[in-house]
Image 1 (cartoon, one colour):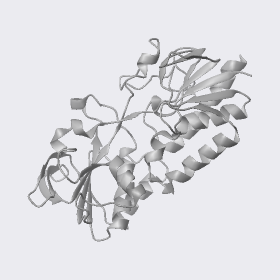
Image 2 (cartoon, rainbow, N blue to C red; image 1 turned 120 degrees about the horizontal axis):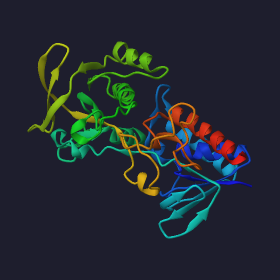
Image 3 (cartoon, rainbow, N blue to C red; image 1 turned 45 degrees about the vertical axis):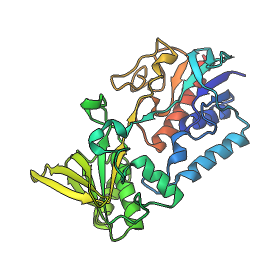
Image 4 (tube, one colour; image 1 turned 90 degrees about the vertical axis):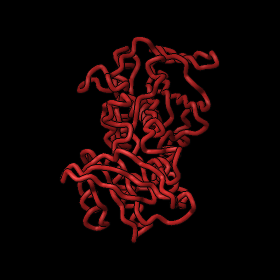
Length: 332
């Protein structure tokens, strides 16, 4: 039986392995963390349906166990070739094809010092909010309920100052989703979304955007927050400009939420010198149409956000396409 090694045990890696197993190809998942799931493990609910992330993850894990797919956790990859993968401990694993499904890295919000993440109380990231929602304890640093919340879009996306010029695509809808969830928890709170451009590209996204405004009374302000500073009473004062009216804004909020974007993994290109990267730093497929899951090196394939930001649905669909491409390659 032909064998394919999948690097990364997130949603893309698991779905690729499941599809390969259905096609009669032996998959081996190599995951550097202790558990499968990747970034999906940190999400509370998935847009636009608000399906609990745990439901999707549990189903993928159940199927992995049911199919008896081999998994190596706590295994870091040092290099890859079309017919082998070398681990950090020097072990070389032979195979017939390789799928790189190592995902993305979250932008470090502390780099944007003007927003005070890690410096001021009550400045959080969207990742922090997802964790709080999972833990069922969303609150300010002192444990009190917020009365006014601001969510800032595009932190670490479309920003030349931090060399992140690409759009992370899912930040806008994440801001809408989290605003609705926060409004459900704190019905009396005023919630503001500060954005550059609202990009509602997916099915059901535009409907969520309207619902956030019409049903939940979430405020959307076109303008970038330029500065955040702590106040004496433990709040965060923000300065911005409403670019639609041309007026400067200044307000104090109880929580400032930074919607952090995706960036490419720094070590992806070091796994194989021949692999091409896009200007964004993500891995570049052979082409964007007929060979979008293939690398420029024959026998090495891509799945999921290793090539660009994607939502979970797109990631799962692409993983199945990757497995089909691997099967076609091995057949020939």
